[in-house]
Image (cartoon, rainbow, N blue to C red; front, side):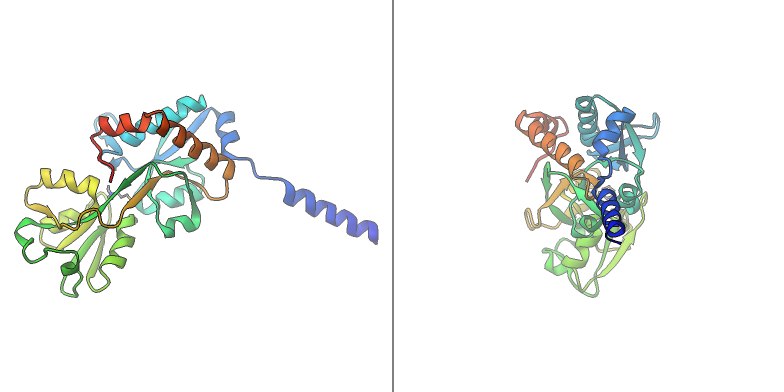
Length: 256
Ligand code: KH2
């Protein structure tokens, strides 16, 4: 009897004590780093439809990470609405940058942050008098558009609890709803907003300078501490070596 209990305990000890292999070992063994990316986020991850090749700030980051790991990089197409699911379903080992949000953190791990940006609303320039502040957009007569599956979709609920919220599925975009007059405003990253107001002079940013900083990080599987520590330490090293600063200059990114 005692022997039997002992052997059961031993089996339990062995099975629970065996750690799942870290992605770090798996990547080195396979010689390939699989990176999930949407290819629609200027200037972070952009897919050139003519060549099907990816370029951008995060693409440079991932090429450098793979180089330092001594492996090849493989970009796996992802979508905003399923980018987190791609991590949990092991479709890729890591994602290009996403905004850290509590909802995403429930199921995915975040590496160290390497970029900070602001969130801003966009409205039609001709409506700027009607919507001079964020608070003026928090009204039950106001419709706010965001892109499905993004951090902005989560933020809109927090910023504009009274407004009507509309989630638009990519490749269609929230700001197009504003341009078409189907929404009064949309919220997006300051990165994108600054580019959009140049491309579409009908749009304007609702001022409230630097409100609500958002933090960018890569997503890795939750619970894989070895892999997360490796990438996070790599980020810190590359920050002190000036690698990220050089990239910010190359892509004309202004950190908050
Ligand atoms: S986030 C990225 O991690 N954005 O904040 C959002 O969810 C990126 C604003 C879809 C490209 C298309 C730009 C939304």
